[in-house]
Image 1 (cartoon, rainbow, N blue to C red):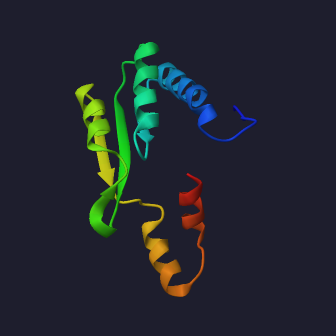
Image 2: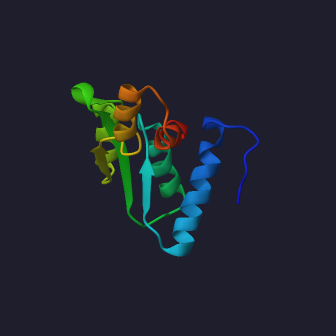
Length: 117
């Protein structure tokens, strides 16, 4: 297991290298979550660089209020033009508990996990 000394985007390239290497060795497909698409595009570059041949599915989310999506249409098109799929769905880990925390004025475990991710 790799433990990074610092948190943040500084670790993206090494994390992607570890993930693509493991997927190649084990014959796995890759499902990757992204908000705006930067990490997804970096993953696709890394996969090309490492000659990864498995499937890659990119997952992003939209906010229910107004269906706001943080991934621009331009980034979505960049990903799809490379023959990869982008799935947009509700943020599964926080939606239910956020409703409860709004009503009952508290913080719940899945909401903490969702904000951590």
